[in-house]
Image (tube, rainbow, N blue to C red; front, side, top):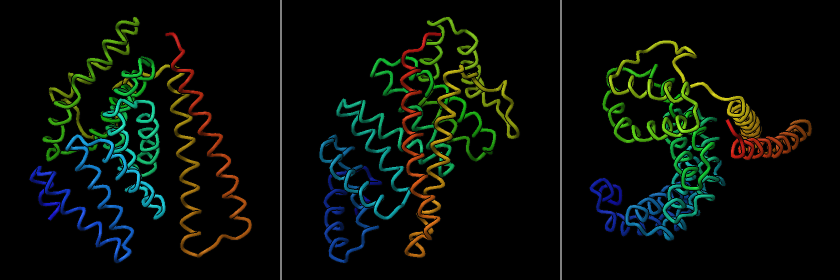
Length: 283
């Protein structure tokens, strides 16, 4: 019933039913169901603008998703937590959640949610007055969506129109900042992609580099650090799945896993350092 009321946008009644379901899931010790209900309670409270309560529920859901090693649930919960923290004006924490969600979406190959989190990273960067980082994530959103649209078909036309309605202002915002910094080539590339989106001129098939907004050297280096981090996390995930299935790892695999954990810490630092360099860069 909670889901029915949620679909009807009656979040107060949805919350009442989700809370009852939460009690039952805990009584039967169904951790997966408990996590999903906690997530639904978090989103329902978010829609009721009860942000602290939403944050509490989502943090509990995040803990369970990690306990169960459910990347899909972890990714969407991190994304939701980022949105809650933005509403609480804690944009630094929001960025941290969005960045973790970004890594997971890239691991899963979830391109549309990857685009969504780039836009939210761009907006949070704007609120933190980090214009170079705002541009970086805005360009990623524009380019990844263009790449993704090459694989869409006519049935996705409604999705295209919704995306345009939700994000056309962001395209123009990124272009305006680039123009203010005399980066006219990049600005024109963003506006060209917006025009293409408005007229639905993109077609399926391969995407040429000239179809995309070019990255600066610093931006390209930052993307490389993200790719490296994603790859190490994939390797860690593969070994942890083996460990979960078999109950343990061979000594050589455990040593490999320990090395991967250290590599992830190093890759995370490299990513953070690269973002900090972007903040200070002058183009």
